[in-house]
Every structure is written in structure tokens, then in C-alpha cells.
Length: 179
Image 1 (cartoon, rainbow, N blue to C red):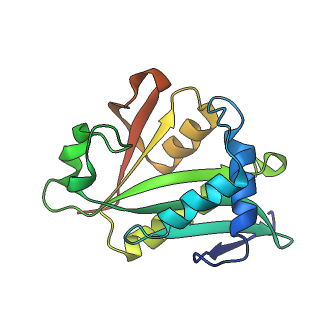
Image 2: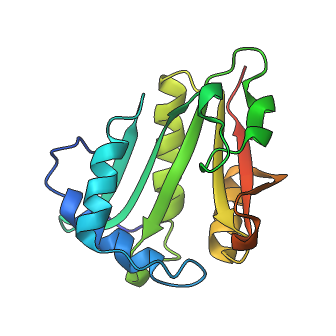
């Protein structure tokens, strides 16, 4: 088994720059093909750290970042047109459920297929349960076959709801952690 360490990050954590660089590397590939700089990602990450119940994990191998993931709590009031949280997700909040949004998962190309994404995601979900999350939702591109495979393996199910803008081909995936 690959020797790695999963660490929970804070906003001033040392590996934040490495996470931002890896984010740019991961999401510059298809199907996303995003053109972001590490500086832009770090600004966004710092904003993410202000989200309620944020959980940010980095995976280290030989003290170098080889993977990352994060999620945070969202609220029914976050469901607005023009955001990543479609109003069609309102059903998730039935019965006063605590809903988290899994924002990102990424691993370095050289270590893909070795279980890092799965280990990171499972640890993230464990920490979400500790924060009393009932439901976790994420969106991914329908062409992101490795991501869909990972999320399906963990138990996420395609909700059938398409995240705006529709032309990006992103669907919402949902995992119930308990009620």
C-alpha cells in the first residue's frame, strides 16, 4: 500500500500553495480545461475557508502534496440561479437535513489509480459525519469517467439534476450519510 499521510488543512497551512498548484494541474486537463493560476486558486481557497463547517484535506507523500479535497455546509438559502447550487436541489433540505457540498477532489497524475482519491474522499465523508452532515452533494462533468467511477464506488448516486449552465454537462451526485 502506498505510504501517504492525510492532513486537515487550515487557511494558513503551508501546503496551501502546493494544493493550488496541483489544482491548476488537475483541472487544466479535460474535460474541465480551466485556465487558472495558482494565485487565483489561492484567493478562491481563502474564500472557501470562510464557508461554514469547511473541511479541507491534503494528501502528502514524502511531504509533498499529491492530492486534495474539500467540502463545506450549504443552506437552502444558497440555492440561487447563477450559482453552483441549483434551486432544483431544494429537496435535499427536507426534514431539516444538514447538507454539505463536496467542492473538489484531485490527485497528481503520477499517483492516480492508487486509491488516493478514494482514501481522501472517505476521510472527508468521515469528518463530515463528525460535523453531523446528513447529505453530501457534488457536481461533476459527465465526461469525467474516473471521477464518476470513484463517486459511484463510494456510494454517490446521480440525481439526474443538471447543474447550470447546462452546456457544461455537469450533473449533481448525492450521498446520504444518515437522517
